[in-house]
Length: 353
Image 1 (tube, rainbow, N blue to C red):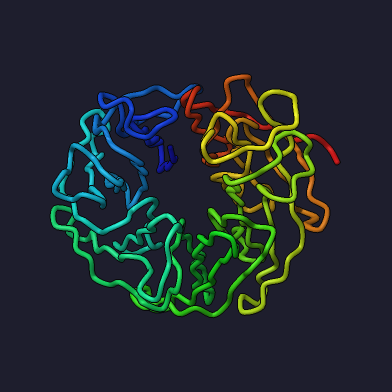
Image 2: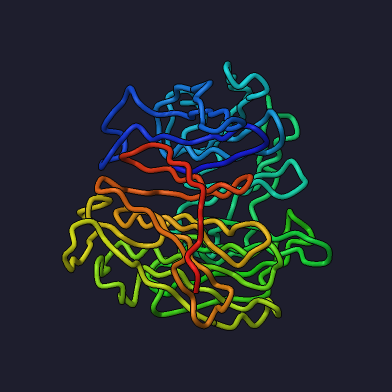
């Protein structure tokens, strides 16, 4: 599933399923790789069958793992675990808590707080994140449930630098809604802007570039999408100017460039991953306007948004068995997590204009 890294170590989540979640009850957990050398070496594994097993680094030696269900923390139901990884060869569960609807989760920069996201499939006046204090990792505690959010988030990200203290909640079905928050008080986010794009079927994630000028949104258009023409109106990566976060301005987008069988397909939800090629988890390359993005059956691309109104694909990799779930830049390399291949590591040489 998802990827997270800190220092010499990278953490990859694994669900106990391939096509249907939960179909492989003996699989699942978090793999720990030493990436200090030329090639990654798996040094530890937290065997915890469940889904979605989303790992995120809180600080050196401590990660949190989010899930819908997990055999290692049945008391938590749908929630998160805190895991001591100070000895990466022997990860140890410290605590767990039920948060309710934890599909993805995100630590708040510089504070022992974790925002959980339900998945974006439901909304209502009470929808919003659970905010968990993990300062005592043996006893994590829900300390806030903001009610300013009128929709459920699929994913939450933050841009906290200098005077800019922003949060982004992506997770709209049909409306493609993304909320932009002022998180000056991290326990009480306030909505200051909103993006509604009728071409975005399902706003999966929204993440700002390092300089805070651009906001990228990936459309996980799982209902219907064109997999192979490179012209699909949905399933795209979108970029907005957020110089004024209260008034985001659309600049450009890029369609899924290729699919898995060389023919024009229409992907549908019943087919799940085997027929999908759409924008999924992505990551900005630090200090650039380049994005590493996973396309499921379309593999991965590096998109250059240096000219955001005319984005281009600067590099790509796609294997026949690709089902690429997520992408992460770390120390100049691009790492991808693939539901069929496992972990891929890339040195990226960009094509010229």
